[in-house]
Length: 373
Image (cartoon, rainbow, N blue to C red; front, side, top):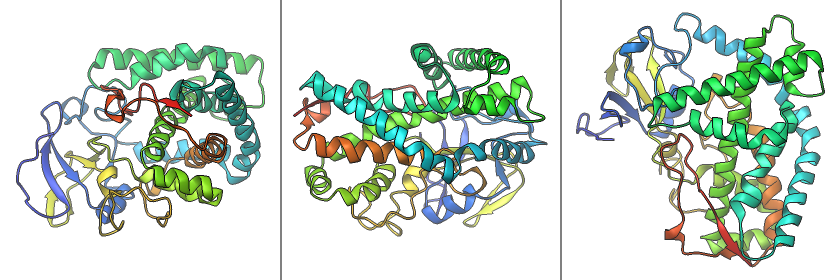
C-alpha cells in the first residue's frame, strides 16, 4: 500500500489500498482497540458498488452484509453460535483435542526425521477438530479445503466468489443430511434451532468451517516457526512446560504481518484522533501494528514467552470478538504441550529464507515447514 504523508503524525493515516482505492489506516493500539468496539464502524456499506475495496476477495475485499440490519444480524449470529463455544463445551472438547494431537505427534515420530510439520500437524489438526465439532466428514477435507482457499483469494474475485458459492452449496448439502439424520454436532443443533432456515444454517456452518481451520492452520505453522528460529525460547519451553499458555499468547501476538488491516466502513461521520472521517469511508484497523505498539508492548519485535499475555488484539475486541478464540487456544496449547517435549532437539531442516509463504490469500501462512530432529 502507498502511504501519502497526510497526516504525518497521529493514529490515523491516509493510504491507497492494493487496488488503488483511498482508505484510512489506524495503527495505534489504543485507537484500534477502541474502534473495534465502535458501532459507528461496520462491515456493510449503503452503496456497495461505490465502496472502496482492499482487494478482490469476495469475503474480505469489500462490504459485507445489509447496511440497514447489520448490527441486528451480527447480534443474531452471535446468539446462535455462542452456545456452541461456551467454556463448558470447550473444557469438554479439550481431552479430544489432546487425543487427536497425540495421534498426529505419534505419526510424526513414526515417520521419522526429516518431515514436513505443516502437513504432519499444523494442517490436519484444525481440520480434524472442526470436522468433529461441526459434523463435517473428514474425508471431504481435500474438497472443502480447495473451496476455502479459493474463497480466500485476494487477487481473483471470480475465483473467490466461486469458492464461496461452492462452500455454501456444500453447506446446504450437509444441512439436508443433518435434517434427515441429526447427530451430536453443531450443524445438527443449528438445524434443530427454531427459526433457523436451511440457508442460514448452511451459511453459519460454512463460516465456522472456514474460520475454524484456516486461521489456526496458519497460527500453528507460524508459531512453530517462531519457536524454531528463537532457540532460547524453544529451550525455555522444553525446560518449563508451564510456559505453554503464555507461549500461545505470544505466538498470537508476535507475527508482524502486512495484512493491511481489518476493513470497516464509517456508518456516519466521526472523528479519529482529530481527523474527520466521512460516512462511507473505508477504515482499516491494523491489528498487527497494534500488537507491536511499543507503548503497550516493551521491545515489541522481541519474541518472548514470558511477556505478560494480556493486551493483544489478534482475536479482535468488543461485539465482533472472535467466537472461536477459545478453540484456537486449546489447539495451540495442545500442540506446544506435546510437540516440544516429544522432540526437544527439533530444528528447521532448511534455511529460514528458503521457506515459501502462501501469497494472494487472506490468511497467508507457510506452504511447508521442513523440520529435523
